[in-house]
Image (cartoon, rainbow, N blue to C red):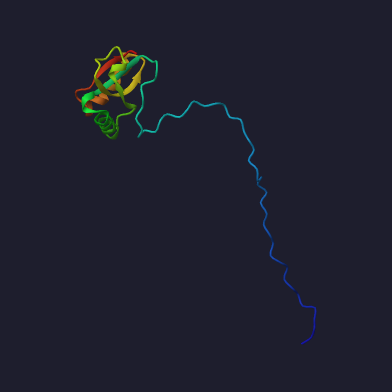
Length: 132
């Protein structure tokens, strides 16, 4: 055995990335805020008058928690844009109730269209104008 000039294998190749390591800021057009998740109750828009579908009116003496539970049941039943409002804050409603509603509409006709869906689960539901 000699001290020959044997062949040696080259070291393994190192792979390097050509991707930039810094993020490049981009300016996208401003988008409206996303709608609330479907499992979250909505609030009546401040200062806005409109129409809605009233699902249930719960006396305030029964507590807001009961109204919130009713609203969550409505969401679980597939209704959308469900919320609770304090009737005492709206001139078009009899004070002393927590009103469980579905939808905020610009016209009575839009609300009536939504009423058909609501009455499948809440047969006692009705359309009501909301005035601040």
